[in-house]
Image (tube, rainbow, N blue to C red; front, side, top):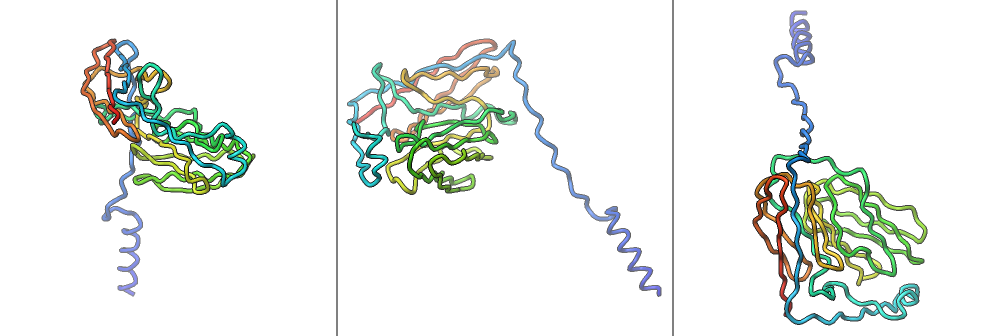
Length: 250
């Protein structure tokens, strides 16, 4: 009888959790609010020097739909040099300087489309926790396969007319290679960062990072063939800081 009473007492104490360590609740990170009165910006261009590489023609005859959609030919887009001597598809982002600041992911999603038997756009950026919409505009089946090293790797087939896929990357990763397991020539890249300060250069090779709080930062420019470059910048209150990168071809 005495042993039963002792066991009951121990069970009661254990359930109450008083002598045992209680599980600590994880508090959500407090979101950082940028002061619009003092926020600045980082702008610049990514130039290209050296011999402009010739774009190689891709053979797509293995899929009649791809061949029909690319009668004029499909060319590799690993290096796209603009008419003004700048480089497209360069991912530019703030690499350091925002430590300890948490930013809510945007409500709007980023879309990557499988169109003309290629991923469009070739390079995209998104914020961790932000949704990625994957669509298929082609009359043939594709299989999107982000080969993530830090985030979860996944592979999903998508038939013509299928509903968009919705996926997220929860951890910073620069960059995530994307391939199609059906069409070996299809390539894309995803840059996932934990803040909104990133951009991808387009037809004029320029970029702009808006609403940046004053401070000292490291800005990195990434290109799938030419690697990365870094630059230290200081954004003054309500000021604009320029950052120019140059990648050299062979």
